[in-house]
Each structure stands twice: as C-alpha cells, then as structure tokens.
Amino acid sequence: MARSITQYKIFIASPSDVNEERLLIKEQVDLLNKSFCKNLSITLDVVGWETDVYPEIGDEAQAVINNQIGDDYDIFIGIMWQRFGTPTKNFESGTEEEYNKTLRRSKKSEVKLMFYFKEADISWSNLNLEQLTKVQNFKETLKTDGVLYFPYKTISDFKTMIAKHLMMNLSDLVQNSISSTTTEQNNTSKKEIAKGYLDLLEEFAISNGDLIKIIQQITEAISFIGKMMSKRAKELSNINSEDLTPEEKTSKIKYHLDYEVSADFNQFCTNLDQLTISYKTTFTRTFTVFSDAYTAYATDFIDTDQSSLSEIEELKQFEDSLASSIESCEGMTASIKTLPGLTTKFLQAKNRATNSLNNLLNEFRLSRSIILDIIEKSDNK
Image (cartoon, rainbow, N blue to C red; front, side, top):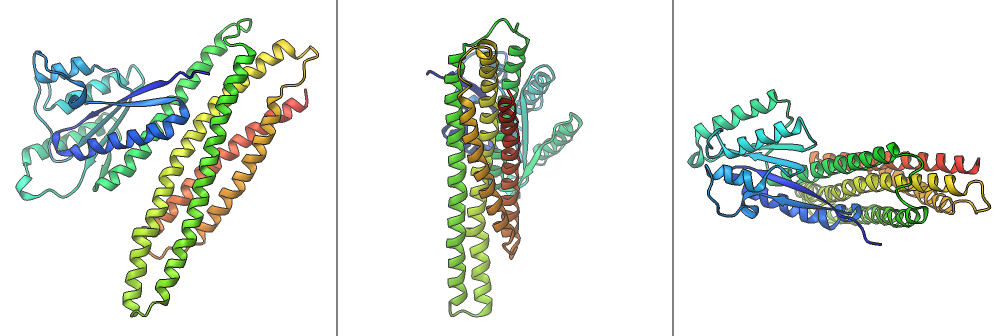
C-alpha cells in the first residue's frame, strides 16, 4: 500500500559566524530523516540562502532572498553569536528581518520559532563592539516579543539542544496535523465514511507494524545500554586493580566516568528521546485509525452474523508486549538510580537517563491504559 509523505520545511537564519551550527543542523536533519521521520512517514527539508537562492535582480539582496524562499516553512531556526549581520533596507540585518517576518506569521498560522545565542568566548582580534551590542539588544527584543531563546557555549551543547528541540517541535506539528484530521473526520456526517472498513484495517496493520518496530528499537536500545553498563563496570574494576597511586587511580576513574560512561548514557538518551516521540506520535496515529475502523465495523456489522473485530486480539497481544516493556524500563531505571554519582558529568548523564526512561514509561503506561479500556469495552459488547 502506497504511503503519503508529509514534508516539513526548516529555515535557518543567521549571520556568517555560525556556519558550523548551520552544517550541524543539516546533519541532524539527515539523521532524523533516516530514523525518527521514517517511522512517521514525514520528511524534513532545510532551506536557506546558500542552497535555495539563485542570482536575480531585486530592490536589494535580502528582497531577492525573501522572494525566492518565501514563508513556506514550518520551523524557523535563528542563531547568533558575535555578529548581528549586514543591514537591509528596513532592518539592522537580514536575520532580524527574517525573524520579524516569521514572528508576524506566527500570530496568524502555525510556525515553530526557535532561537539560539552562542555564548562562547570571543578573541580580542575578532571583537566588534558595535556588532556585539546589537546582538545583546536583540536578545532584549526577543524577551519583549515573548520569545524564549536558548544560550549555549559549545557546539556539543548546541547539538544536544537542536536534536531534542527539533523532535519536540516536529512531534507538535505531527500531533496537530493528526488532531486536525481527526476533527475534520468527526465533523463529517456519520452517514459518510471517508474510508472503507477494509481500507482502514489495512492502514491499521501498517501503522501497527510501525509501532511494533519502534518498540523493538526501544528494547534494543535498553538492552544495549545494559550491556554497556556491564562492560564499563568491568573496565572500572580493572582500573581499581591496576598498580597506580591513589591520585592516578582517581584521575583515571574520573576520566573514564566523564568521557566514556557519560558519553554512553548521553547517546542512549538522544536515541531514546527520539524513539519516545516516534512512539507517541505513531501510537496516536495507529489508534486514530483503529477508532475509525471500529466505528465502521460497529455501523456495518454489529447486528449481523459477522465475527468480532479480529484486531481486538492484536490489541491484547500488543498489551502483553507493552506490559513486558514497562517492566524492562522500570528495571533499567532502578539499576541506573543505584549508580553512585561520583562525578558531576556522570551524575548529570545518569539523571538525564532516568528522566528519559521516565518519559518513556509515562507514554507506555498511558498507552496501556487506553488499550485496556478499549479491550474492556469490546468484551462488554
């Protein structure tokens, strides 16, 4: 069965001193397209002046960019560091003009606005007080406009932020799209069925398959971090048995925890957060389709000799799988909580891991509650 793919566009606005961040966003988008987005039948496309603008005459260069890119994007990402940018006809910089255009649009339609300020040290040779002052003033403008921006110091910090924030905003966009579709279907006359019963069953089977794949990926991620924890524990034990001075041993253990064990946990959290949002969105889509199929079944077959809806049995099997996944998550959460917070970085990574697992557990428990309610209502028919 052919699938429809929904495209979401991301526009990046920034002066030229944060090109590394622009490239990193594109890398993250590529990763999301290969994992998170693939499960949801969506695709992301990054648009910007360097890839989507061609030579043309206009009132000014910014007008050409505005005209060619337009405002047909779903997510706006603004980034600034020490440069504010080149003035345009109406604004202090192109980035400021693009921000204001997006802000006006956000009051009329759904567009996600994300803004980041780099707070890394600036060398004296590159310091431009006039530009830096404009950047600081612009921060105050964002506060006045009610825009919550995020500061960061390193490219690693930005990578963690942008991955998480992109997933959260995409989840909102997809959820809103599903809600909008559901509302439109509910407003349609009950005499009119948008899709036939068998078509809905086929769509449910595909979506349910996606859901099962995501749970398998979550199971694999939890199993992998469990194996890594055992491996790192053995490595720490080996360090303890080495013939080192107490100071050398402490230093080596600290390095191991800060740069190896913490890295394992942070990578696990990034993957799990992606999978949690994929799960949440796919579950909503799957059970929206199931609800439509059940309504169609009740309308056409409930008073006939047709057998009961076979998909209920699939739900029961899925509920069993979900109960097992909840138990696995609870076990891993308990194991991580028992680990001593020997260094600040490790403690942060440990807390992040338990938070990610708790977020997943909340989604699993909510899903299981919904499924059990459906099964109970079906058994009482």
